[in-house]
Length: 102
Ligand code: HEM
Image 1 (spheres, protein in one colour):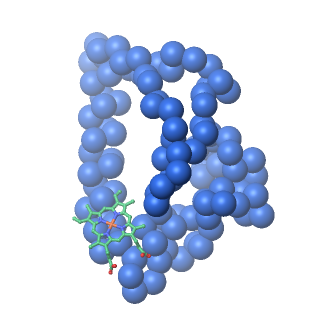
Image 2: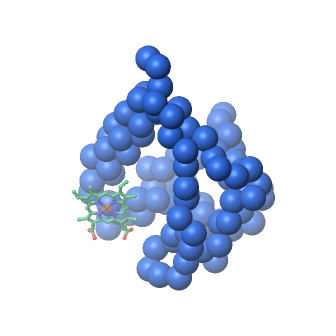
């Protein structure tokens, strides 16, 4: 089981529910061991800040320039995991982009 999906620490861990992080004290910086996207301790990712800046910059640009829709209902997304060294989805996540009018 992936650390970030342990039901001992997360309510409905398989659900897509980003709001779970609102008003939560859990962050990604390596001291909350139920959520360690960059690892923790002396071997944790040395590029955490660079990585976060790039994720935020890319995401902000995509959200600024496009409106996004799912082709299926959120509940119908197939979240089956692929096997491998890191967690990824077996099915591609397909989205519909609509040029924003800003
Ligand atoms: C969002 C982007 C990134 C994520 C989620 C991420 C995540 C991780 C994770 C989980 C580890 C293993 C930590 C551990 O063993 O405890 C790691 C290690 C590492 N990452 Fe990243 N990383 C990201 C971006 C980057 C970038 C952009 C670079 C380089 C420019 C980088 C360089 C490294 C290096 C060199 C290590 C090995 C550190 C060591 O073993 O001492 N990472 N990263």
